[in-house]
Image 1: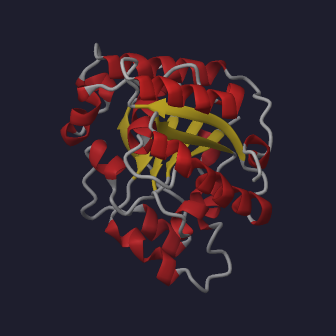
Image 2: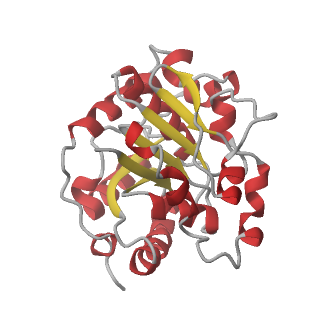
Length: 263
């Protein structure tokens, strides 16, 4: 059965795109068929994969035309749907559309059963593009850095997702929290991780993504971390995270609202 996973956070720079690309590459290497969907106008996932969008359909065009997705083959078992700046128009163009929040679900319908995993890289704003990503997904992964501001802003994210799950994407489950840019030498990082694990319990993956310069360098190369620097800590961590994702068979997820203390 296909797992459709949205990767989201209302903060930028927390590793959403890096996680989508790196986990996707690791799962593909393990023999899983993976589709990555770029929903961000910055097109960081598209750039990271070295996709040239000239003369090619992007996610905006598929959504606008309500047409089936035609993924680009990146390498064995790994496919992607690219994005470009056009998707920034979605909040205006889709404002009065009756299916404005479910267009991605409709476009995915004809291809989703061809993949083991589909990862949707959501932009760091709660507009129509992000809501489409969350609505199309069955599961939500939140990426966050081990910093004080990240924890402080997490309640805002959860509150927004609760609104979406209560009104639109009622089947969406929070099934994973991924800690990125972790440095065990820093007391703040260690303390924040304790708070995150205390709050989200077994939703937090055991694997943390350590701070690694190779993860910052590889996007401009158009290669994933397993190709760019296969012996780096970043490659090791994301490969281990992918193994942990596979091991999580039939996770007992609860509604997101149960994982945050009401104040």
